[in-house]
Length: 471
Ligand SMILES: *Cc1c(COP(=O)(O)O)cnc(C)c1O
Image (cartoon, rainbow, N blue to C red):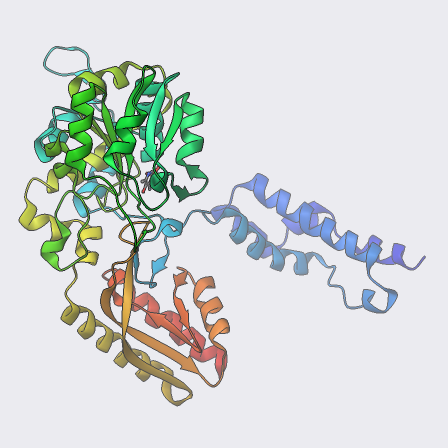
């Protein structure tokens, strides 16, 4: 067997460790990882010796230096953070796959501060005794929304789950058939209800539900009237849903609490900025809804969290429920959320400070002038074999929020005779940092709306590399 000859050529781990380049790697990488890498690279070669056809065996690089030179690439791949920053050039503001909302400067600072030192997370500094982690957020939530009480949990899905478990376990909750939604990632209202122990009492039809349908469904075992915001879809045409006031009226008349899952939960009226109207949390509070739940990282533009506001009677029961511990937020989230909410105290400036609101309300002229600048620099870098231009396009709010809102933008379109659009997209995605773009027909589109300050330079340098590769 000539294969033994090749197997004998494989170096020992120590031999590779003694290579000049490998000693340098010891500075940047932990030694156990280096040893593991060498073992794996040797093992890989051993497998190839045993499986490759005879004719290809001669091409194998088996020497210690060849393994040493593969080692650095292996280590880089293993040791690089898996969760990394990417550039979102898609124009989708609340991009769920890219981490939804990004934090404001103040919120980012607050996270670092809370993470790197001890804090009064559950310590009342005035009384010198144990405090509540809910206390940090509650007064802000109350001030901003006008509600009696508030609390925060891990995300809106857990807020809904905790509310249903507290208010309707073993009892009926009435929901319109038009609101039995799936939010994505397997969050389906009927399934969440079943898990919480609440019994779903469907009323009405997909397109039409009247207040009389709700009224007729109320019985001995009814514990809750549930209203769910149709976040990510719309039913249009021959439709009817009772108004919020009608539903609160029924809830009062029958003495049954009403809960609303608002989904996005916007705190400022976006229609003032020319954006599709989205019901605000304050309106639901004012209408008298008992428990309102919404996300921290959708239109609110904060960290992942589930916010609950409403009547103290119900919120206090939720705080005491055994599940509250299982869905509680950590101090970094609380720090980010507190800073985010603080910026809402001034409605004039929040749209500038909060990145999600800033991107959604970015003026069309600003987007156009940024697109023109980016396109100018890219055509200078890319030269004649590429076509770079600007074109009117639509950005999306994303995150299952405002599905019909079309935000006017100006995108930069890039195509080339030297590379296909898929090759360009793939190269940008493999860049450090990865750049995520949209593809439209035979061009990649870069939307300045979601490109952050300073990221333009990284985009330019990625295209310089593309240009060099195409040469
Ligand atoms: C997004 C959404 C949820 C889930 O919220 P998360 O914060 O992602 O857990 C629940 N209900 C509605 C109506 C939503 O839009």
